[in-house]
Image (tube, rainbow, N blue to C red; front, top):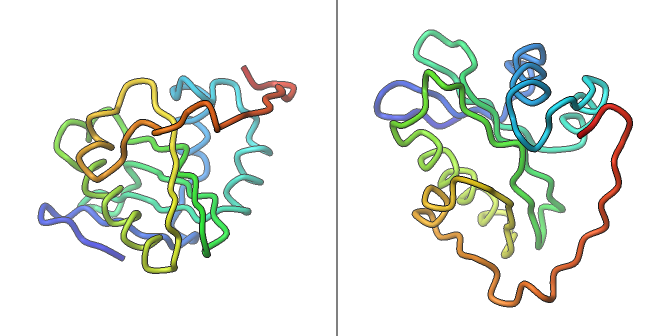
Length: 146
């Protein structure tokens, strides 16, 4: 667990995660996951490393999900901080610690996708793909996902 100078905590412990709150954030507020069913959210959490961000009173105020082999590669996704806690550097602080945790395992490539937070990620070392034409994707939609 990491503690921010203002008292916020970043913790990868699953037992602290508030699944109802995470479902609300992802399925109803996050542009990339609108309508995502709870069963999919739960399965994604079960098969990932998930960091919770907690306020000074212990309430969950954010979530960061990492899909990784813990050897070479990681994908940082489902990054969400509650509106009331945005704008004070918490995302940058949390992502820097998550990056450091991943690098300590030997992971040497971490990717993410963002529509609106490039500046946050650039401050902790992320950059646009040098050769984006090498990256490919296969995207299908599940029932209930947009």
